[in-house]
Length: 112
Image (cartoon, rainbow, N blue to C red; front, side, top):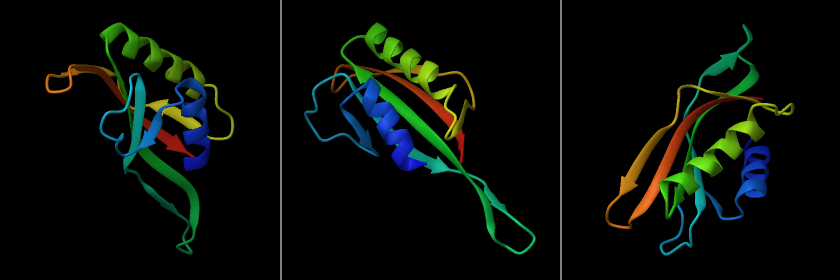
């Protein structure tokens, strides 16, 4: 799941990082992290599927640039066949005054 998600996001934005971007990373960039998930086990206590709740954040110098990249991510993840990706809710926009970066964040439910 992680390798597929990473390669999919990097195809959209080459500056894609897990958990945190290095300080001073040029914009735009994407950060993703697993924030939880559900255990799906059989009666024999064997895992049957993997589920992850993943937050994907896009950071850019303008709100519209971040929004456009987020839209590309959504239109690429939704039709994925190797993993099932669905947003758990609509995205939200944010602004980081210390770095003057605009962000768009969305949480995804991903199954493999």
